[in-house]
Every structure is written in C-alpha cells, then in structure tokens.
Amino acid sequence: MAGKKEEESGKEEFNVDEALDRLEEINNRLAGGELTLQESIELYREGVLLATKSREHLEGVEQELQVVNQDN
Image (cartoon, rainbow, N blue to C red; front, top):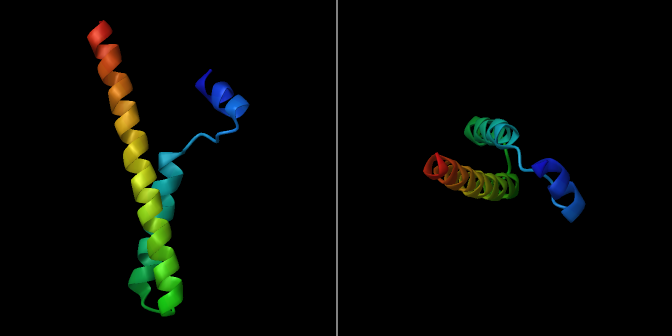
C-alpha cells in the first residue's frame, strides 16, 4: 500500500539495497585511481547524497518499528 501511495504522490520509493550497491561501485571506482579529478568529485558527491538518503530512510524505518513495538 505504501508503494501505491508514493506513486500517487509522484515520489519514487527509495531502495536502500540499490543505493548500497551503487555506493560500493562508487567506492571501487574512486579506489581505482583512474578517474579525473572532476569525475572523482562528481562520484564523491553522488556517494554523499546516497549515503545521506540511505541514513534518512533507515532512520524512518527505525521510527516505524519503534511505533509498532510500542503498540504491541
């Protein structure tokens, strides 16, 4: 149901697993040392954004679980 609600509001559901996969890919590319400075900066920015969104999403899930646990 939550997915449908998000679709109706125009927001896409955030997928933490996909974000973590992308973060791993970014990390590997940055560690490879074959990127230009500009490419490295762009990937770093993307990584910071993904990490922030992942943290926020997981904090939201944690809050939902706390509510569920309080209700039981």
